[in-house]
View 1 (tube, rainbow, N blue to C red):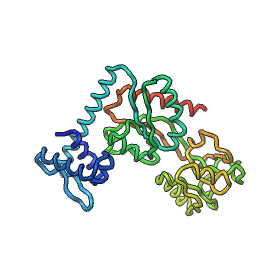
View 2 (cartoon, rainbow, N blue to C red; view 1 turned 90 degrees about the vertical axis):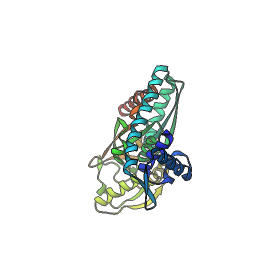
View 3 (spheres, helix red, strand yellow; view 1 turned 135 degrees about the horizontal axis):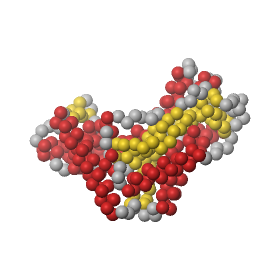
View 4 (cartoon, rainbow, N blue to C red; view 1 turned 120 degrees about the horizontal axis):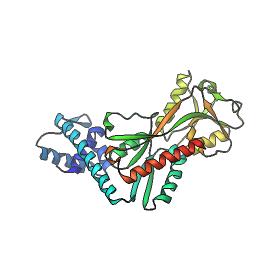
Length: 301
C-alpha cells in the first residue's frame, strides 16, 4: 500500500472532508478522492462512507488508520536514527508558534541556535495552538508550540509528545494614567465599566476573555477588535481601552501602558510538541533544549 495514500486516509479520519485533506496535503480534492479510491482497490474493502457533506471511516478504515499511525511512527524513528548516524545538526526545522511565543521567546532561541549550529536553518510560521498541532500531525511542521489554555492533547494526537517550556500568567493591561493603574491586582469585575480592545486574530483567546467577563456578570463593551496585538496595544496606550493579556506580551516594553496581575490568578502552561518518532532526532533535540534554556532566561529576567 502506498504511504501517501495511507497518509491521506489518516488525514481524512480527523478532517472528514476531501477539501480539508486536500488543503492539508497541498493537493486538489479530486486527487485526494482518487488516492482513497486507489487505496480501497489495494485493500479490497470499503474504507470510507458518505456522511452528510463529509465522509466517515468504515471499521476497516479505522483499523487501517491505526496501522498507519504505527507505520508513520516507525518511519519517523528511522529518519531520526539516520540523522544520529550522520552526527551533524543540519537541515531545516519548521516551527509553528502562536504570536506571544513567536515574539517573546523564539528570536532569542533561534539566534542562540544559529551561533551553535550554523548549518541548522529554523523556519518560523505563526499559527495558533490548534492550527500548529494540526500542522504537526500532517507533517507540515516539525515542532509546534501549544498551551493548555486553548487546547488539550487528546487521543487523536497519541503520536505527539510535548515538553513543558514555561508557565505564563494573565495580566490586565491599562493605560499608564488609568485610575486603576496603581493597583497591585485587579479582578475582571473591577473592569465592568471599561471599554475593551481584543485581539480577534486569535478567535479562541478573544472568546476566552469575553467569557471571563460574562462569568463576572457582564457583557464587555468592545470598542476595538484588531487582527493582531499592535492595534490592541495602541488602543490601550492611547487611553481608549483596556484588555487582558498573557504575561509574555510584556517581555518587550510597551510605552504608555501598565500591566496589573489578574485576580484570581489565571495561568497557562506553554509546551513544545513534536512527533514521538522524532524524539531522538538531533535537530529536534537541540531545538527543544535551547527553547527550554531561553525560556528560563526570560523567567529570570
